[in-house]
Length: 279
Length: 355
Image (cartoon, rainbow over all chains, first blue to last red):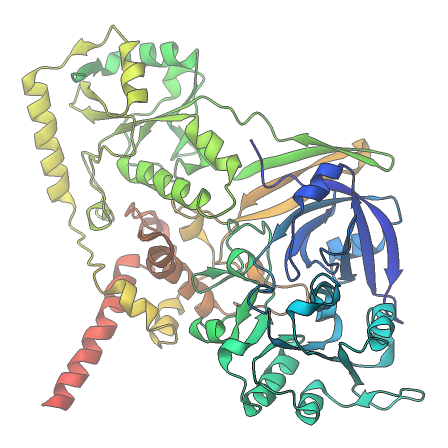
């Protein structure tokens, strides 16, 4: 019988360093058994438990989109034992993957809406997945106007530069990049994310806002969205908690009676307000 | 099938017979404590006990459980599936409250889209031969949480201690089949059955702790930010004894144990508890439950609020271990009483106001 704790094996196909200080890398993984890839049926916003066997396992949001066939991608910041283990890996190394887990972005419910994506820092990975998915020629017609506001500390921290350049050439998506302080050669916006959202003032009419980033950015951006008449059910968040199993059994990712790993990680602000403030 | 009689002098025979086909677990004395362990010699079985200190959950949910083992060969990694999960266990002498905890475990581990086969397989391969509690402790309160010292459900066979002998009552088909093979058991008399009934009644009356959970859920649900939690957590040491000895606590940690010298290792899961600060500590340094008050609250909330919300069951079997072994006498009975009172005091206030 299927044992949910046994990882599928993948090999690292490619590694891309994402930032100047080189502590964030994107790993492209290809499954050793093709059937595992077919079974790995995911939507943007889901995560997987990935492991450097011998170092341990950790939950990471899936940065690739299901429309990018053949492999999956994870963007990992070097933080602790497991993520450092990842950063020490080379192409060809074996990585364990369990998943996909969690609910993901509600791509069906988002159909027919204007989508406002607000991201900060390295929390952008599952937003990349969502954008790639929506921009796919099969899916683009399902969504209306797409606006992306993406903020970073400095220009060196901006992830997915190739994708961003790509998106900027397209007419069916509006991209606004911002960094905290002025820099020589930076032609985009300057300032924190929340005031930029205010400046751009996306309409709340028939819209869904997706907010992902550090807590202070989420808090301030939500204030602005509320000023723009976004209702609680129109604002989506993706939460993080410490996790071990990813399948609602190890216990530690609960907020009230909900487990982030199975009931989340995506919650609307309306749902979050019903939960105890313990995350 | 009719009730049978097992003489206490026949316990060794029972063990010898069943030990051929099953791993035979029974209460045994180790370092002065009663625990459930795999018996190799019938002399190790201890029948004069109230209940084990460590709950028998560890037979099917061990403190350390191997998820899988792996071998590293250069760049290649081979995963060896976890040890044989197809077990045949007998847990002899389990108390009805602990047997009920197996039901809660099963319910939790098979809830939702993902099943925990590590647990479920071992559970399905385990047969429970319980012994009714003739002498419940003063910390016991099973009758307040859907239990009874002689509760049959969740057991395969119930034994009742009649002094020199046990009355043997098969409950499930599995239990009946087992007894059919023990043709040397004698038949019980009407007198034996009556005696067992009297003992059951007497045991029920012995349980003096009556807890009322009628308002507990509602009160907990609406008092997450109550000052009560400060009061409750003040004396707590955060030692985690309550959780480690709790038959319904399921939480675990997962780690890789690497044997660098032999290029192999294993991924294991080990018991963990929300009473520990590190349990929720994130790599960034953020900790959603970094204060003791939050951790104490989570334990009570989980069992008496979140559990009923998610599974329509109370996450407690009334064994009283957490009360008995808490080093600072943090008494669950008093905690629940305080929780129940929150509303009554509020009502009182309202009544005074309305007058």
